[in-house]
Image (cartoon, rainbow, N blue to C red; front, side, top):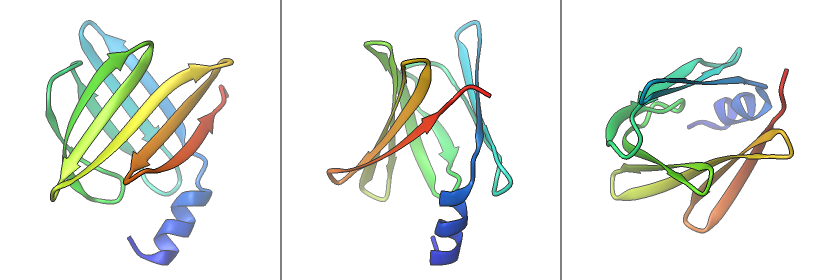
Length: 107
């Protein structure tokens, strides 16, 4: 991802919508930069194209009340943890020992 794209994406304030329909979960991110959506069943691997256009294999599980997503591509792994803390959604993205945290508040 180029420098300018990374800066614009970092300043975006996306809306995150999580819905559950039976055993299918959908996570939709909407922003002026880009909209993305994933739909999945817990524990089942699925193909995903990320906001930065990587093609990954993802698996999402529920661990202690947190959604834990593992993305794998080109021999690399990223883990994304989503959990509710004090009525806010805390999203941690971890790769190679580095953690980026984003906090979402209800609109």
